[in-house]
Length: 157
Length: 299
Length: 105
Image 1 (cartoon, chains in turn blue, orange, brown):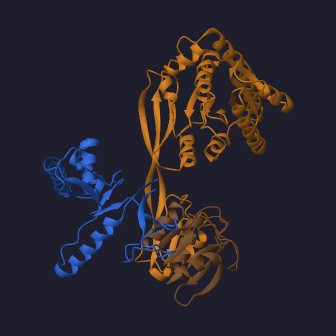
Image 2: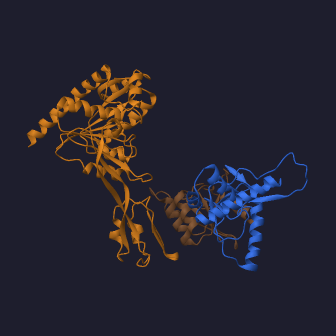
Image 3: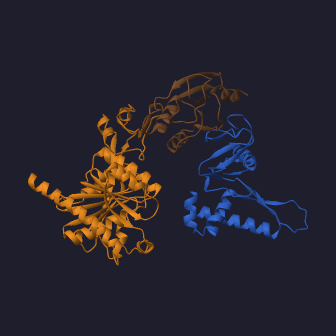
């Protein structure tokens, strides 16, 4: 079972809901990803600068890089797998590559964040009481349904 | 009426296909009769691999009819739910929801009878194909090939059997492994069943399951021990204790196994193997003659 | 907010049933009024489709959260469609009462 952090996701969802109230943008379609990245981030080493800057790589951007450059799929196949259009896939892929290039050239850390992705099946685990649960789309709360703890992580079953 | 022989086994990998293909070959040689091989292992039909010159001559699509509920006509009376023996229909009046779960549906048609509103219609959903191959014989090799993901093995085997003509004298069914519904379907109208097993604890265990099944359906059967020389003697004890007919033994040889793996089942058959099969065939011949005689007198 | 806890018996001291479709009883607990009631699972011993039938029952009852030991694929699909929260607890030796206490904390 692979477990990864949801902290950043929660921050993101707070930000984005605030944004909706102000500007009401077009609803972003969720991008389906098969598995989350197996790391929380990458850090350059052998660098003098102590600047603590980082780029945020979204899960869907990681997935796009994986499908196109690791699984060697063409953009059409990859977009179908992620449930998005080919041009959208191309945009996400382009953004992912630029972020990675930026991190390499400017020696920045890469941090992975949840973005607009959703797992094939959305299951969560409570870090306090180990209950596993789903969060239906119509519920706002992101706390453990048993012990009300906010310390929850997504799991990939 | 044809004489139907089913080659089955509880355990997989005991040599059903080896036996079925060889029996077809040696029976045809010996009796010179009108004979057909039918591959009922619809999940992985591989008899055809052993006929290198086989050419596909015909293919027929087999479909299952799955009911579909028209929400506009449905009154959510739940009568179809009550009729459905397989709990394949979900109707929730409070939220106006009605749906058929195709993976549970057995296409029995009861819900169509139940519905007084004409809200249920059937749509064809493909479950696989029946294929015919020319193998330089009087009759083509027939096989069922199940669509990946479908659970309708039994239905496809039923359809496959419908495609076998009454005029054929001897039919050999190559059954799927195990003792579940598809196997029962392959056995149920056979005149004789050949159980292929191996002298290992696994072979013994699964042979017992198979013997119990055949006792239940009351079918005559005999056992062929394949890979004889491996394992232990427990299987012989069982055969003796139960008074089961031992049709023959096929010795285990490494060369024959690699021969098989290369797909060359019917060319350069080693002497000892071909002797085993000839002996089995002569035993079967007696049964077939008695059967034909009986049927002749009934006429 | 109606919560269902799968139960092996008809009272709060009964062990928590780890099966969903084939659970013996369903404890219906109201987190607002803290009242609980029990209904028997009529589909516990059907040959096939127990998960589907039980999920159907949950939707009919207007349940919003189900606490059980596991959910089968067909039940999951239906419950997801109707936005019912599924919660899986894997502790052995839990009683229905213990789960309710946890909810009330």
